[in-house]
Length: 262
Ligand SMILES: NC(=O)c1ccc[n+]([C@@H]2O[C@H](COP(=O)([O-])OP(=O)(O)OC[C@H]3O[C@@H](n4cnc5c(N)ncnc54)[C@H](OP(=O)(O)O)[C@@H]3O)[C@@H](O)[C@H]2O)c1
Image 1 (cartoon, rainbow, N blue to C red):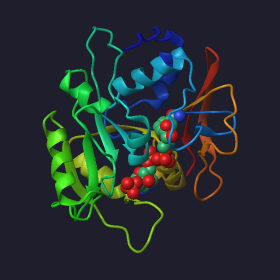
Image 2: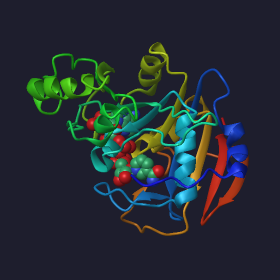
Image 3: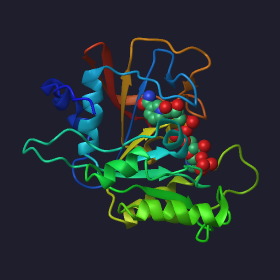
Image 4: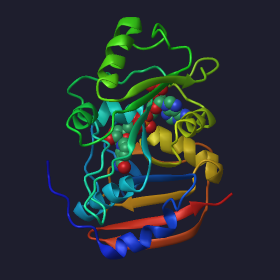
């Protein structure tokens, strides 16, 4: 496991207005190229940010109760979703990993990084939010047997499968959970501060909901283009302006903080 660069003190101060300060707070954060792509394709994780902004990600994780990604990110990136940056007193505080996965398409295994991380005591067991009618697993990818296997893998490391998502009406390109159901289920389990880390479908869906869903936005812009085949961040419903905007150069990257305008 690579060592993190030290956290830039100026960056920590810059982030304060965009961080939870007690009570409910949802931070949307991701790294994008100059052409607003967050990866080169849906099947590969793409390194974008420099070492300093990578450390920032771990700092942000340390300041939230939970970190949420969509199933596309869980499948593509096999993320660890823990925090590797100790706080001022040297304590590591990892957020609860949460995967929004209507049809339970994440093929979670004993060797999945988030599972290994939890088993090693370096993070918390992931919660996977699936469709509400999935209690026996028949309606999810792989059916009842796979559902039981994946649930056992998660529960062995303190994670869980939470069948809490309303089932979408009609045919859809992908399962699209209602965010009030996602947030409600997490808040009912004590999650007040939530960091939303991607991927593009999750971000685009939430940007369209605006400040009702997202309290602050922290975007790392990396100095490269990924091209038209890259996975694009662009709100589903068109233009959204931002307020309380500040920019901070960090190494080769620049970090934007702001809030979505109502
Ligand atoms: N640069 C960065 O900061 C960053 C961060 C994270 C990820 N990524 C990249 O992003 C890519 C993955 O993004 P993605 O767009 O394919 O997947 P994603 O946004 O991670 O996950 C999308 C999936 O989540 C489920 N979902 C359930 N409810 C949803 C809702 N309301 N809105 C959106 N999705 C919902 C759907 O799958 P079901 O049908 O299974 O429910 C959907 O297909 C990967 O290439 C990854 O490397 C980049």
